[in-house]
Structure formats: C-alpha cells, structure tokens
Image (cartoon, rainbow over all chains, first blue to last red; front, side, top):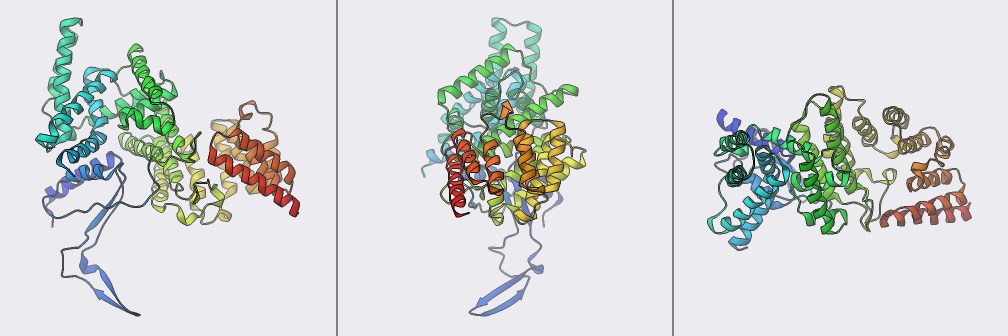
Length: 98
Length: 424
C-alpha cells in the first residue's frame, strides 16, 4: 500500500491535472478480494469470487482524460509521481476533432 | 518513429501543456503580452534546437521557463541601457531574478498568473474577434493556422487580428493584473462571453460545410474547466461550465450519418454522453449552491438540464422551461430569448399559443435576418396543419442561413410540408 507521502504526491499530481482541465472522470477499484469474475463456457456461466491470484494484468483504477492528442496524454502521464508499475493509455471513440 | 520525430511530437505536446503558463509567468515579469509571447516562442525555438539531440529534459516546463526568463532579464537589461527609468528597471530585474531556478511547474503563483493572462486576453478594450483569437492563441496554445482553419478565415486575417490586438493592449496600457471589486464582475463577464463564443462557434458553426466543429467545443470546455478551478467561488463560471457540459453531451446525437443536423427533439437520447450530463448537473448544483441560480448562464444551464433529465422528448418539463425563460427574459430581455420562450410555450401550451407569441416578433428589426424566426414559425404552422404557409417559412429560413447543412435540413422540412399538404 502507498505511504502517506506517496498518496500526497499523487493527490498533488491529480490536482494539477484537474486544474489543467484534463481529468473529466476517474474511478478507483476496490481490492480484488471484493471482486467477482464471470466465466463463459458455451451456455454455462460460472461466478468466481476474488481475490484473484495473478496481479500482472490487474486494473486498479482509471482516469478519463480530455486531451488534444495522445502525445499530450503521454507527456502528462510522464509527470506522474509513480516509481513502479505499468500504465496504459487508450483512446476512446468520439466525435472527430477540429 | 525516429528519435528526432519523437522529440518533435513530444515538444509539440509539451508546448500545448506549458505555453499558457509560460506566457502568463513571463507577462507578469515583462508586463506586456506581446513581449511575453515572443520570449516564450524563443524558448520553444531553443527547445526545438536542443531537445532532439540532447533529449527532453526531466522537467520540460521548468526548462522552458528558465530559458525564457534568462532572455527576459537580458531584454530588460537592454531596455535599461536604452531608455527606461532606473528605479523601475531595478525592480523588473529583481522580480525576474527571483523567479529563476524555481520549479515553475508547481509554482503556487501559476494560478494567479494564468488568471491574469485570461483577463488580459479577454480585455473589453479588444473587439470580440480579437479576444477570441488571442484567447485561443495564448491560452489554448493553438497556432494561427489552426485558429484560421477553425473559423474558416484566411491565416493572414487571424495573424493580423492577433498583432493588432497585442498592439491595442500595449497602447491602452492594459496592465497584467487580476482585477478585484466591481471591475472584476465586468471583466469576468467578458471572459465568460469569449469562452461561450468559442463554444458556440464549434456547436453550431455560423458558416461553412460543417454543422459543428467539436474541436472548438472541447477547447472552450477545457478553458471553462480551468477557469472554474481558478475562481471556484464565482457561481457564473460554474453556470457556464454546466451549460457547455450539457450542450456538449449532445454532440454525438445532433449530427446524422451523412453529417446532417438532428434537432434536439429528434435526437436519439441514448447517444447523449451521460458523463458530460453528470458533470454538467454537478456544475449547475455548484452554481446554485453559491447563490447563482439566477445568473444568465446558470439559467440557460437549468434549461439545458430540463432536457438532459428527460428520458424522452415527450417527458420534457416544458412549463418549467417556460418559467426559466421568463427569468432569462427579465434578466436580459432580447428578441432571441422571446423566440426561444415562444418555442417552449408552443410545447407546453399548444402550437397556437406559441404562434401568437412568434407573430408578435415578426416585425422585430433584430430578427429580420435571423433564420430561426421563420424556422420556428414554420414549425408551429405545420403543427397547426397550415402547410402552405409553413412551407414558405421554411424556404425563407433556408435562404437566410449561411450554414450549408442547416440549409439542407430546412429545405427538407419545406419539402415535407408539400407532401403533408397534398396528403391532407
């Protein structure tokens, strides 16, 4: 879990994003122990309770950003006070730009 | 991608992020916007020269600001030897030097600088066109070419507009400041007007082939959201943001598959952006909580919210919309508001009641060339089964609009009236 200092730094970064009009939405996930998975097998559906062992592709949260290009998103993300982990940038379909 | 193109793309993105803060910080030091922008551009040129080989620095914003501030000090010293009074320059240099070495990206003063720059770009001494161009340029970080493309005017026109605007600011001795007291309200109103003008040009382009230019809407929204964070206690800023968020939520739904406009009541509401609606309603609540429910933007946002809350067009609370238009009309009476109110009355109390009000506006000089007057009248006449008159009104509306997509829609409506007339 993050230290209070790390949390404060993250808060500061998030505030900077909000002040720049970049963040339009966000969400943080509860730990996977409270999560559920559904497995599909033909017509059969199986519910699996968390926690889930593999942490490699675990999504812990997301931001929704409005920026003018993916390069801008990259530059913003580079400024994040993270020192480990992988963060992925994906574009959402929307009305085309200017 | 080669390292050089990668660096160039990074520089372009960094410029978009940093340019407004950079120009704002410099304007505080040198006092005028023209010089501040030139210094910022010089720093950009330096980055373009150095970063592709040396790599992008860890804190690019601070690098740009540091470079520009060194230039600023050189410039102030040169001015010193040239003309200006000694004591004044001493202060300038001192001020400039104090700023150097600070991590400007997280400088506490950045917010105030940015606000000062916004007030300067939207100064009432400038024409509306000039304010819009300058705001997009120094606050949006758009190039002259991008602004020209967005407004369908020649690049030289925009370039001239910006040059002249900067000159006007210098000649009028507009200072870099955040106004307070009574002046603040008037100046803030001018800022909000500029942002909404930009939004509206994107939302219903006044001329050209496209019905909308969403890029301008997004830029206006971004500026509005930034402003709302800079002056969180001003209810009308939240009112404006609410209005833009809710209107923008319909962007996807107000254009059909072949680019044709789809009017509010015909829109597929499942295509409205729920996130933007939620943001808009939250901003509206904020405006109301701050005591701003009766502000002009908050009222318009409240009207937009009535539509946003209705799951189908039939569920719209039209009597409430009429009441809100009554409030708008009291606050800022205008024939356009009366026309909108007439539409709401037509929906709430029947087309005959709406038509009565519209007929009272026909001789209004301000609406003489306004295409929406005959469009609204045509709509009401059509609902009353008066197809021949309705057709003539739609044709007149089509001849008055400069927007190609809108003209086609109005011509289509005229055609439908002929069909309905013969069928009935």
